[in-house]
Every structure is written in structure tokens, then in C-alpha cells.
Length: 475
Image (tube, rainbow, N blue to C red):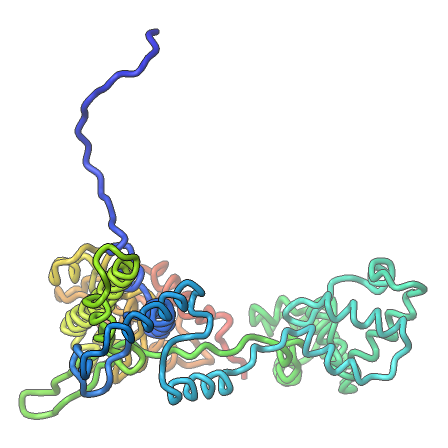
């Protein structure tokens, strides 16, 4: 084998992405709230970028031409601030500062965890040092439901509290259950329910027998089996289950948790007029959270005044170019999102008129071909975006769905079929619920939709609808 350096020529095809392309793709994928944060970040970092004043054009008036010495002094100050990463925040009015301060003050606090919420109540209890330490250990060992699988012997061994024994653990558990919930730190669902029955003084042997021996039968709604095994009537079993349903299976559910995330639409679809020709719908972007960006005319003037060859000119030019790229990326994002939304709701006009039953199958590739972009662009554009429609606020991805051809040649969207299944179940006789085979037969008979029983089962599970056995009510 001969070793050495040599030259060779070859041809290959590669996609090279410029920084501008990468930036445009990243901005396209951002939802409006994330984009607003990204714009604020860019305004902080680039002094050549600013928000357009309402009613003004892109080019603001500079006013009288400043003296060169004043311009040089301002330019040096801006360069110094830029080197310090603009730690003092963006250049803006006092009104802008007030609005941001108000937003910070009105921002909700992060939700306490289950352990933090319980510990805050435990702080006011009158416990000795060892018992309090064991109680804190228990609190920090709970799962999200408020359960603790360890036995008192295991807790006493593992808690690391000097002198702690099973009696200490029992005192800690008793205090927690008195302060927080009668079933907190239960080991499983059976113990959780039994502790609550004891706390509420329910001494009915049937209730205890159901909890101790027949929870699986309750889950599968096999009430006649429970009646036969306990020697009680079916009516007695139904009444006992009503009491059990009043209990809390997750004792930690009322503590901690996560704050609800607000869903804000990026697109609004609304009816504009209703005449003989029918309802006309308009599609628009929510622009309030995405300000119009412009180049600062002052800095363009600095570019003219800066001496050729000096660092100030390069400093201004780089930031000017970055600002233009960012403005173009935001404008391209808005334009692409609007064109995409308009095309989606052209196809889904029946949804706007009829609701979910009017939803039609639609593929991303189809929309990409129609607006002349790659399918990956469509995927990025709809990611995390929501549309406010006459039938609720829904993710844009919701309107891309597969479908099934009916016997009369029409195509029914998957979401539409699921809605029809939900409607059939909602109207059924709960004492004689529809099986999946019967639902499939009704879909074929009433809506000409031919799908297999296993497909009905899949859609039913996707809708979190229990089986017919579990839905059945007993008289």
C-alpha cells in the first residue's frame, strides 16, 4: 500500500444552509408568544432594530442633521454599551418600561409541588422534633397522587432520623392525615379507600368487601358478579358504589400541580358576512403580539458619518445587516403562515360551516404543493400554532387528517368519524350500550362509512370512551 498525499477531483451535491436560512427556519417554527420573546431579545442585542411607531412608515424622520462630533460621541457610547451586552436592557420609553414591570407583577407564581404545599401546612403543627423530621421525610417521598408505597417499618429504617421507630412513623402519619387528608401516604388504592371509609365512619360490611375483594370487578363494571359473591342485591351494590364514588382516589390531587398553560391563537378565522351567496370567512394573523420592526434611521445616519476604514463603520454595518436579516425572517414567517392558513381553511370550509362533521381529509404535501414550498416548511409553520375558529381554538395540525372513503364516493376525515362515534355513544341507551360491532353497523347504515370493528375500537379508545361493558348501567 502506497502512502502519501495526492490530489483528486470529484462531484457531489450538498445542501449548504446559510445563517440567514437557519434563522428564517427557526423563526418560522416559533409560536407568537415565543416569537415576541425572540423579538425582545433581538431588540436588546441590536441597537439598529426598533419597533415601528403606530401610523409611521418604515423610515422615521431623522430631523436636522446632527453635528459630526455629536454623532461620533453617540456612536462611541453605543459601541461601549454593545460590548457590555446591553445589560441595562433595551432602549425604550418609560411607558415601555412600565408595561414590562406591570407584566412581571401580574405574572402568576409557579405552582407549588405536592411536597411544598403539604410542608407549608405541616410547619404549623405541634410535633416533637423526631416526629416532624419523619413527617417531612414522608412528605418528600410521596408520589404525584399522594401515595407512599413503603411500609412503616421501611420508613423507620430509611428515614435517617435518630431514634425513629414504627411508633414514631405512625404518629407522623396520623398527624399528616389529620392535617392534610385522611388517606395521604396510603400504599395503594385499597388502603386509600379503606382509610377514607374509616375516617367517615362508614361501617357497612358491603363497602369494605367491595374495596378489599372486588375492585377489579368495579373497574370492569361486573356488578352482578359482586352481588352474587356478597349475597346482596344488585341495587345494594349500586348504592354502595355511589358512596365509593364520593371518595377521593388521589389524596394529593388538591395540592401542588402545574399552572394551566394559556393557548393563544396565531390565526383568527371569522365570518365576515352572511348573504344569499352564503357565509364568507376571513383569515387574519394576530399581529398584536408581533410588532412591526424597522431599521433605526439614526443608525443609518451614523453609517454615513462613520469614517471609512474605522471600526465604527464595520460595527454599524454588521448590525445593520443583522437587523435586515431579522426583519426579513419575521416578515417571511408572517407571510408564509398567512398563506398557509388561508389555504387550509379554503379546504376546510365545511368545517367552518358545520363543525367537526364537516372536516375533510387534507395532507401537508397537498398544501405545500399548492403554495409552492417544501413539506418541511409546512410542518415547521404549523408546529405549535393555533387557530381561533367559530368552533373553538384548535391546533393548525388538527386540520391535517387522513380519511376513509364512503360507499357513495365521498371521503370522510378521521376526526369526523370519531365525532360520529362520540355522537352515537352519547345517544345510546346506557342500560343497553352499543357494542363496537353495532357502532360499525350504524356508521355504515346512517353515514355510508365502511370501517372494521377494530377501527371503531381504536377510535373509541382514542376518545377515551370505555367499552360497552364498562359503560353499562344497572337498574
